[in-house]
Amino acid sequence: MFGKKVVADMISRSAENEHDRRSFLRSAGVAGLGTVGAVALAGASTQSASAIPPAGGPSDGAILNFALNLEYLEAQFYSYAYWGEGLDSSDLTGKGTQGGVTGGHRVKFKTKAIKEYAREIAMDERNHVKFLRGALGDAKVSQPAIDLKTSFTAAARAAGLISSKQTFDPFANENNFLLGAFIFEDVGVTAYKGAAPLITNANYLEAAAGILAVEAYHAGIIRSALYRKGLFTEVKKISNVRDAVDGSSDDDQPIRSSRKHANLVPTDDNSIVYSRTAANVLNVVYLTPAKATKGGFYPNGVNGEINTSNKNA
Image (cartoon, rainbow, N blue to C red):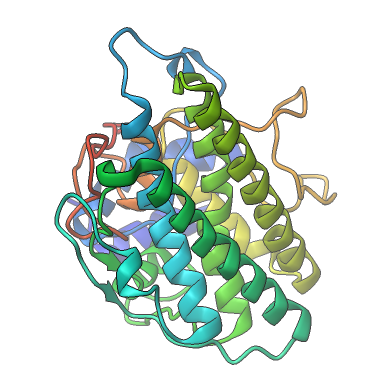
């Protein structure tokens, strides 16, 4: 296994181009990140056959419960950032082992607009949790244990944002908050896009499409705010590491193109958003390119039938 210093050195190492850098990360040692909990948030497969529902694929209920696990994470992150407290206890119950939240506190926002972004997104994510729990009824899963502390530090170290001896608190200031949010938002969009072909019930599909649209708005808000802040280098490092753990494809995109144009809407050549399989989403939130059932933001894993990441290294 590679130590934290070696991982950081690999990530900061120069390469001929972006593809080479990410390929290097993927093949040369990001596999060691799973042990130290190292990368930050939710993966991706491209527009490939992996998005086509296989015979005997997951049920609609299993897919919605997987989405609920992700919504718990986002709702807790934004709730702590804006209000300084998490979800109501009545919104955490269900099947599986219920867990608490480690870390999280109110952000001291300096920019009124960014504070308003946090408030609106927090409300949306709370409503998503309530909606999915209502749609699932007695089949809903409970909130699993969520880590909003050591997971972000491990991710930031792996990306080279901080040294191996430093810690990263996404709630310390509004710049850190935006970088932490960036880790999540692109993930939610591509996760819902990847799940769409698997959902058989038309009503569930319509609801999922509605949530996908909201998540896309959120991602656009966060990417735009990061662009205005000029946090290009930091975002690129996070994108590199996120892309390195979520599969062999090279899809994850920073907020500025190689020609230094704005890249606020990450899409393929047809301007269509990429898809992520549930397994590859778990690679990012578990912070590992390995096959795993827990880690990263979910130290004990997610609840429900869909709970295992892919082996990508």
